[in-house]
Length: 341
Image (cartoon, rainbow, N blue to C red; front, side, top):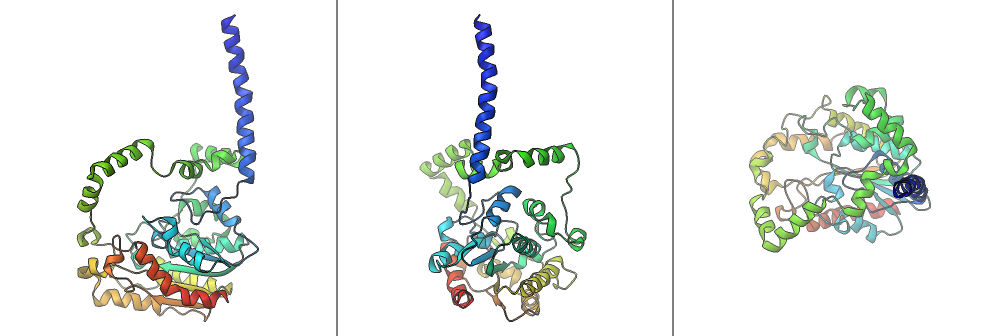
C-alpha cells in the first residue's frame, strides 16, 4: 500500500514539474532584460534579446568594443556608458562592448544591430591597438555567442578570414535542438549569472574570509601588474592591410559611413607609465598613426586617446578605474553632445 502511494506521488511529480517548466518558459517570454551592459558571459539568446529589445521610441547610441569600454573590474554605474547615460538621458546608451571585443567583433555586431532593426542614432567605439596583435585571442575570432547570433549577416569573406566555431557532431546539434524549443535552457547561463553572480558559493565564501582576514589585499598587492607581464602583448610590426584587425577597422569605418551613422571611434588609452620600456618607441607611434590615417567620412570622428589617461587611473595595461572612465566621459561628451543634437 505504502509503495503504491509513493509511486503515485512520483507520477504526480512529473506533470507538476512539466507544468512549472511551461509556466517558467511562458514567464520568460515576457521577460525583457535591458541592463546597462551585457553580462560577463552571455548566450546567443541573451544577445538577441538585449539587442532586439533596444527601445524604438528614442535614439540609441551603441557602445561597441572590448572590456575597457565595458568597464572591467568596476561597478556598472561607473562605466563610461552609464555615466554618459545619466548625462544624456534623452538617448538610450546600449553598451554592447564585452571582453574579447575587437574590430572584427565590432564590425559584425554593428551589422547585426542594423539587421535587427535597432534605430542607431550614433555609435561610440573603442579600438584597442593590442588586438591588432596576431597573438591576441580576439585578433580574428568572433565571440562564440555573436557568431551564432549573427549567422545571417556573416559574409563569405567573414567566413574565409575569421576563425569559425563549426557546430558539428551530436553535442552541438542536440544542444541547438533543445535551445530552439526550451527558452529557459537557452537563457540558463545568463539567468544563473543574474541571480547568483559570476562566483559560485564556495568562491564567495573564500572571498569573504579573505576580505575579513586581509589576505585578499595582500594577494592583490602581490599580483600588482608589472611591465614584464605584458611583454609581447603589443606587436610592434607595422600594421598594414594584411592585418585582420586593420581589414576590419576599414570595414567598420566603411559600414558606419554607408549606414550614415554618426560615430566616435577612439584609440583606447594605454598605460604608458607601466609599459614605457615596450611601447614608447617609434614603431608603436607609427602604428597609431596608421590607424588615425585610415580614410573615413565626416560623420565619423576618430580620436587618439592612447595617452589620454595618467598611469594612476589604470587597473593594469589598459583597463581603467572609475577615475579613468570619467576621463573617457570628459573626452567623449563634447562629441556626443553634437551627435545627439
